[in-house]
Length: 444
Image 1 (tube, rainbow, N blue to C red):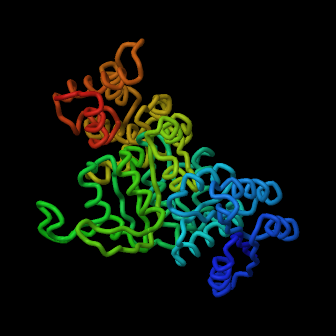
Image 2 (cartoon, one colour):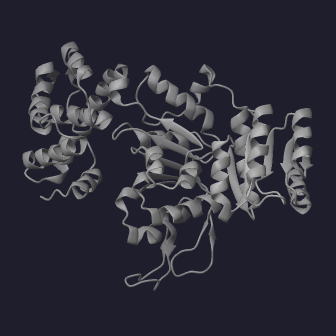
Image 3 (cartoon, one colour):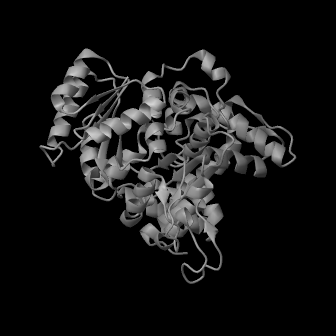
């Protein structure tokens, strides 16, 4: 049963008709007393609740009712309904325990999608061994308890439309997790569109994400379809979401909330059905506190948070990863499959890997390509790591920013300005290297 709480009887009637067409049982309450009587008497599958009552425009009564509901029924998901201009009120509601929020006037399809996701997630049971037989790991390598905890979360939420925020250091495999979410969802076989937001300038943001019509601006010689439209019916993966400036965050929030946008130069709105997966290596909670990331956007994208452990916290996976990367390099370069000795594997398992899996992959690739006769001992990998580490790590006593800046300078000097090689030495992507150079004012 779904409980609708709204003092506007016409809203309750409209929602009743919509939900009953989808075979939901529905009850309605028009004030706080009626709502609590139903909550005490029954256990709804979900509650749809307006945040503003006629006696209060501040939303205080809605927040008080929400807290009362969660005291009696802590496991029942609550979706809040509010006007676009009252989204800060919805954010307060999320803090108080609400599952999600939707703005009025709502889109029926989007509302039903959110309801189904909330009910599905609240009813999910922990993954069992039987689930693993049909779970597509895509390219995820490892069997450590730390990784398996991540995969258990993916198994539970993949087949919903819940927004997911993947966090973790550079090189931990956030994109692979996003791919696994898509591959195991009901949207598999539909588009999976990857967007590196850190590589899109503020001036090109709207054109890249929403598209444009011919003549919309100087240089727009033809129509362009934006990334959101390309992802229609599938999944859009927004990497480096923490790199968005405040102006772009407002535009992003609107499309994530309404699933509607207008291409540049076009007044006709485009409606899209996409599942949103975001990733970041930034501490978004701290950015919210520092007022550099919008709190309402933060709550919109992290309905489910998946935190990837750094490689140093899942060392049990290192031998599997080493063998996988070594086999792939040999196959791609027509080399014999290498033999990696136990002392070499022990050495590799002890390294700090500041660039995580990407750093390990680069190390294995470099060593095998410049290596020996196919038998690899610890000394072969030491030859690749020791010069880099001694040149890349600056003196102690510096701040984190100074340390990172000096590491970049050292890597650029060692690679003689070759950006690809410098990024390889640092264990980061070229795009990340460019961003950090700009951040610290480092020039070649």
